[in-house]
Length: 114
Length: 114
Image 1 (cartoon, rainbow over the protein chains, first blue to last red):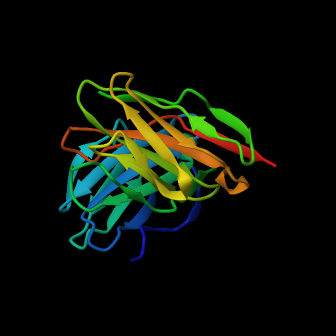
Image 2: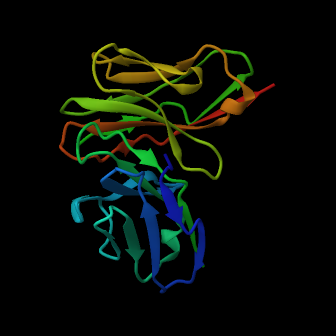
């Protein structure tokens, strides 16, 4: 079974631009979560989607948004990029919503903002 | 709210030596516990998990961890490490909250030298 895929793997953007990242979960997995990883803050939860609805949200500004499609694929969007948004963005999928929290991660999208 | 403390940011060890990576958590409710490993430029790979039952859990690559409820700890151990175990290791918890959200520790870099 294929794992979680994320596209693109690398991205360079300029301050003020916006960006969209994509995530395809493991086949059959219906819940998708997003995390931001930086050297200073570590791994921080962004949001979780299930059945096309945002179920939980982390402490990030409104510039960060996401959505989930009927096939469970998910996208996240960051508008008005800031230098501090440079990070590895990780998508994770799980079989069910809630449950034990057991999640499987994709390789991430490395976003660099200049 | 819950939190995770990984007591060592870096653990240097010689090949074939035993290693223990420490993890303590804080939560007002019961939790599920996980260890993930991250190799350079990759996503997170699930090493092992404690959901219920036996407090000693075995994972991939010869790793094991012991859940100690009274000490709120979930330390990761391996009796004999290899060069290929060099990576960053993350301890994570999911509280019985109904969400899949994981709270991560800051990570421990395991450096195995010959």
